[in-house]
Amino acid sequence: ARGWVKVFEPHQPTAFYTLFEWHAGTTLGAMLAGKHHFTVHDIIEGATTVARSLGRLHQHGVIHRDIKPDNVQLGDDGLWRVLDLGVALSGKEPQALRELHAGTPSYMNPEQWSAVPSESMANPQSDLFALGVTLYQWLTGGRLPYGDIEPYQTARYRRDPVAPSRIRPDVPIWLDHIVLKAVARDPKLRFETAEELLLALDRGASRPLSAPHATPLMARDPVVLWQIALGMSVLFNLLLIYWLAFLPRT
Image 1: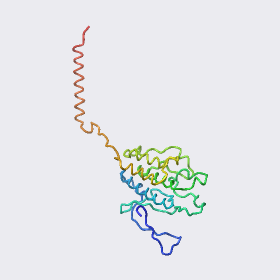
Image 2 (image 1 turned 180 degrees about the horizontal axis):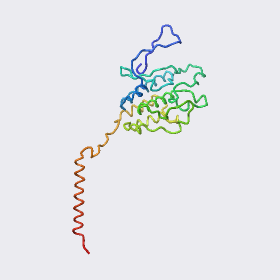
Image 3 (image 1 turned 45 degrees about the vertical axis):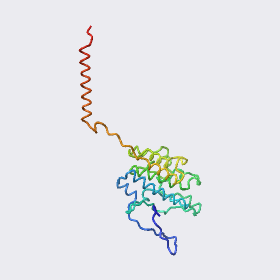
Image 4 (image 1 turned 120 degrees about the vertical axis):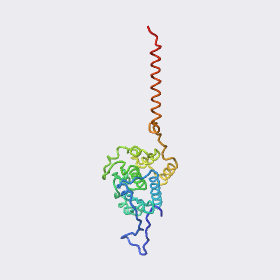
């Protein structure tokens, strides 16, 4: 399927390993580390592909649990793919296994560190939060919205993240809103489904990404600016001469 690495079904299944199709390419993590520049348009297309892939995964009851730049790959064929289902949950695992923490702390939603087991379990919204963190990094050149998080370091979540457009001015406001909604501290403010996130991205992408910035007059035509300044200076001096010449004398 588009957005995923194909799995080869064995004739005699075994639990020891899974064989995947090979795709040459580079992970998003490696590209960010290499300071690769992405256009906003390219980022939106890539994030849309990943969100669509997660939506299909969630429809089958599977939770990835480790979405991050290192697990998102741009293939040499130009397609983005989600990698590594090593810690994924299919819904068939024992309760004790589902309650175990898995994934990368900086991409895990705050409630996963709750002391209440029912609140700390990963769910589809956990994947969407991780995608939000990944999208934030994608736009800002690798910055994390809450910084590097260690396990149970919930104090990091006390402040809202800086809007991506504050770091990268060409990020449109509507995309700011999507990213900040995806990584909101309050789970009630986040996207509930991948389809909701996709709809927001599709609607936003149909708008112009940014209005052209007005070029200052000095940059457009410095001669005109100097001509205006000279004209105002001459006018001021003429008014001054007139005032001095015709000022009533006492």
